[in-house]
Length: 245
Image (cartoon, rainbow, N blue to C red; front, side, top):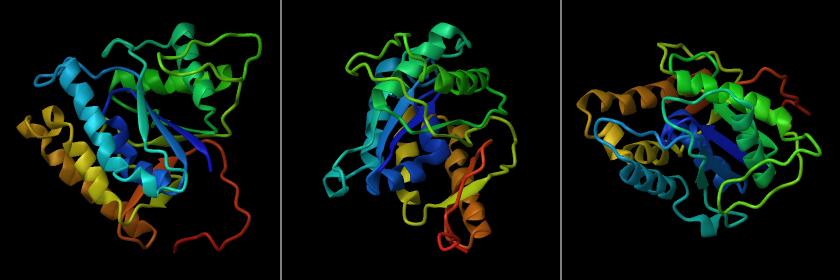
């Protein structure tokens, strides 16, 4: 089983982009940690305390009964605490995320797709790309958030990109994960962000769009629902029996 780190610029990005995959991977026994780079506030209806509670509520939908998982670990999340709307690509911020990679000993890292209209999204992805490299450097101390232990240098084997873009982007995934049976958890985890997708009337349609995308991507591989991911590095296969269609 793998240690997986899913980085989101704001609480809700991970759920929007790959919530069903998070639920499935956790249930399969992988150790999944969500890293919120900022607290996502201010927003018109939210505040830091409310948004933090919503983020915690979302976790309960993603891993509702972790005792049944192979390793018994629920999906967890940690807040890095960079300022929302002011995220910058700096060495300090690179090392902060590298410290989380080390602490979690992540062999797989997910981050938002690199083409985006949101400056925070673009900055976070650039930081993650460089933090992946920084995490392996010996002789360099990396900070860790409160509650996490300092970890040894590590270079995550895989860096994948999920789609939570603010562009009117048509996804071009390198691969699609079959998430049939997990979309209800994803939708409920998104709706847990009441101040973002329930109270603002203009944002209520986001859930419909998310469901439509998953149905379309699922149809591309012959299943009911799918989530797409992009990779700059080739994914290796040891046979063809894993293809779903």
